[in-house]
Image (cartoon, rainbow, N blue to C red):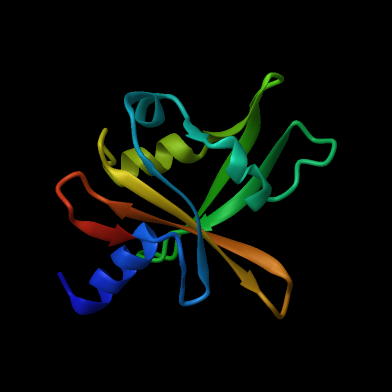
Length: 134
């Protein structure tokens, strides 16, 4: 593993900020995350764009590897659950990147101080411990 990647993995494991990117959550993917939708912990909902009166939100996630902009759509999981789910765009991303049960994702955001907008990206640790950033 390259030195820079070791630092990145250490920072992700400690929940710290790395080069301006803040880790929102880390999750080991289960079957439902690969086959249906990505469930996001309720305590992380505030890290995403606000829902306001909408029942869902859309936001872009950049694939740093190819420059492709993925559009993910989030919704509240249920009226009784504070969690949110990414229910559109996620499965296409997971399939194109060949994500598997047991892979771990690191969802991150960064504030663009000039525009006050947040940018999002995903880091992946493969189940075989190979690290990738998309």
